[in-house]
Image (cartoon, rainbow, N blue to C red):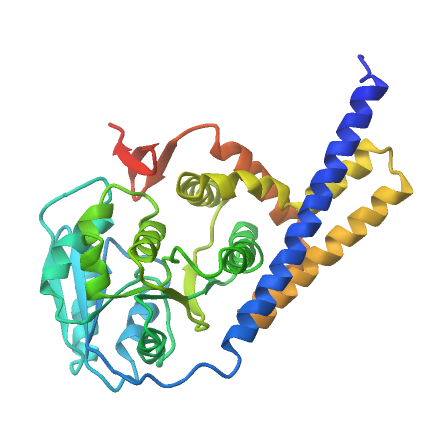
Length: 392
């Protein structure tokens, strides 16, 4: 068996150690980003001065995990102003239609309409439906979120409060709620949201002096801001429609506010292949939306690189010191953001899975460059400069 030369072995050891140090720097910045976010909002959340009419747009397709409870939470709002919910379906035979009718009967005081979206205006069926739903909306504020997003009774009041400070858009953090009993893969996805994804959002917020994108858990925008960027039709071919909306509204001169109201998304009892497909779509969406930042993701995974350093150095004592620091910093970020800010109790339960989550992210990062093809809602698409092209 061929043995690597001493020079090559040393180079590998040095590279792994440097990547570990880069990861430690990133984790430190994530902690600083978390502190910045908490300090910004400490004592600043307040009741909305204005209570604009709000239209919640819900593009629907099939029955998602946790959908019924999520929809009911959007109906049970303690909001001083007027609000309505507009559902959009591509087919009136969609199983979601029956659930909408049940919802209408349970909440007769909430104005609801179902729009039959007969046209396919672009690659994204979801955004295509939004284009056709928007003309039916009466609100000064448009809210878009997925069918499985569960919110508090004060969700709309908090959106109005976030917008009352002059923002053009409000977005909100979220956690993943695992269906019981959760599978390993469901736990890894929830852990990734709370301890990997949102810390990166807080880091970007600190470094970029604000948020210049949005999270799909809540896209709440002034109608004038949406119209200024050309409406939903301008993003009908994009995979990362949430990112595009936030980025375009920010570029148009409006402030995007990351409001400290945490909402929930439902995570089904994933098997490995479903987990992999969902995560790969998300990783590729980030890659095409923020290619520079995504490339740098490889330098944020301190724990895998620290383990690699231990192996490359022949288990040198200093490498275990580096590994200990990496684990300590990773746990500190998980507890500070996942538990302290997001109040996600699942993080405490599953914190021992952090190294496995990091190795999964490293594998997904590498795999995201292997192909530009994704699967979404039973369709296959090829990604070209952030846009989707359907593959027959």
